[in-house]
Length: 326
Image 1 (tube, rainbow, N blue to C red):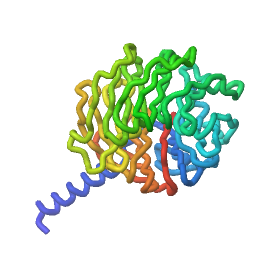
Image 2 (image 1 turned 90 degrees about the horizontal axis):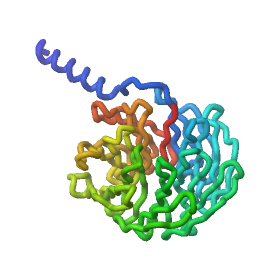
Image 3 (image 1 turned 30 degrees about the vertical axis):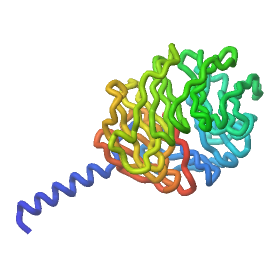
Image 4 (image 1 turned 180 degrees about the vertical axis):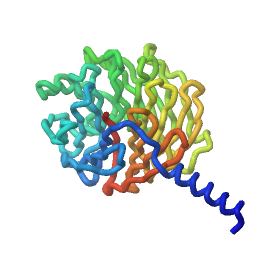
């Protein structure tokens, strides 16, 4: 082999190694709900290794952290409850009756109330954490799923999967104020940190709707099918950078994640992920994106600087949601 060819080969190997090696990141823990294995997988984010499995009940899906990060709440859909896990001891310390078939939920900014999308009865339940009781129910469209609480605590947003509606609920009174049509089968919803905008995915139509939150007006729709996507693209889970400059959209059976520039409203990159990619979460330093592959039973680790999927962690079962804590 010539010196030139040997040097070129070495350079290619070095480049491949650099792309396949996860970039260093700050200490954190990754929690992954598994709707088939009925557990929450616990992974060390620095070592990218599974360190525990927490049995929580039948079909865990949506998850959220308390404002102080001490508690992980998990919707256990087929047991009609929300379980509370101590993030340090990794033990279930409470089980709260949530109403039928909770899928996703959101916490109020003060951490006192869980707003639950009850898929089977078309309601949003206001669950008081301290008492463990439902204090309010609001009837919405059929099959509610996506849910979000505005940063100022004024609004609860719920998406009706079967009716293709986004519902705006007054958080203080529980009164339904507006119902606005979006693309077919809306799934997830996220407010920007300043509360000025609301972003909503629609799975079957493969769109992302952008709302002006104060006026409750739909101001733009991003059609992912027109952005040169992979085949069978959908739009499901969301993750948003703290600066509200980038949004990441899980493309479901498109087996990719799309990155959207939130200012230009354009898709800037695609990242390869597992089969039927669903839940997403960013590492605390926002250098990595974690993506749950439900049909491939794995978690993709995406390095955002290089744009490469640098590790695929086999978990088994059907991973659904991802939450990261410091």
